[in-house]
Length: 379
Image: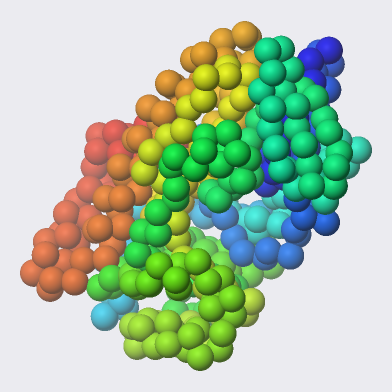
């Protein structure tokens, strides 16, 4: 029996643990540095059909319907006028069994950890990784030591495990934007049954339902320069004066949403520029530990799930060498679209915005373009 150790109990780590759990040839252990898996994060996530199809293999199709939502469209609005520019029918990529899904991240994590409780070890903060000839030895700050045949690292964009192995050669980069997250009640200003995307200068915000109860997720991406010291000072984002200073940069037309927001959190967005590949074919990165995207294509969770599934298949079929190359190609495709979306969403020149809106109206109805730009990612 092969021993598989997974560092990080987020979406990618828990999903791949569920896949290994189905195969009796593997013994899995999931290590989480915190004292418990965080289920307090009530913000929403979007899952395109490429990830829903994979989640259904572990029973997501039986997950409670009242805790998820299936929007049909993305509505594009201009922040200045609040006029609707156009809408994109994302249901075109759905099948009967797999539909574009929105839900709370905490609900998905809770679903993924069900049945894995005995395999999850909390309060295990990695301190050293020894790569021996046949076995990988993990040392933790609580003086526990574990050996495994495969090590899967999924502990996020600031992966400590990754830094222990790759000597900090690839640092995540602040992409000069802040994310403003929270939940808001139903609003007559938006279509509460679909995704609403508001475009403005150096700013865009997205509002969408996360369940059948009408809870709405709010996320805004604001261009904002931080000093190097501010980037590293996470306590700063709990400072009321600093938060007020940030919120003052939100377009006036969107302030009414901020007045209603609950569980407000602001954090800097960090992205990856490069990939870390190590010589040991039994150690792999997935999720944000492998690569972190700008959030403008809503593919973070879906690509974490998709990448975890690809790695599981490679390990199961003894083709681990194929994983990195295949995953990098998909990541590059998603990353290019994410960067372009952010650029297009944040345009400030009135003339350029006018032409952008004209192109948007045409492109969202162009099936050939949509299949190339979105279908290659969603399917």
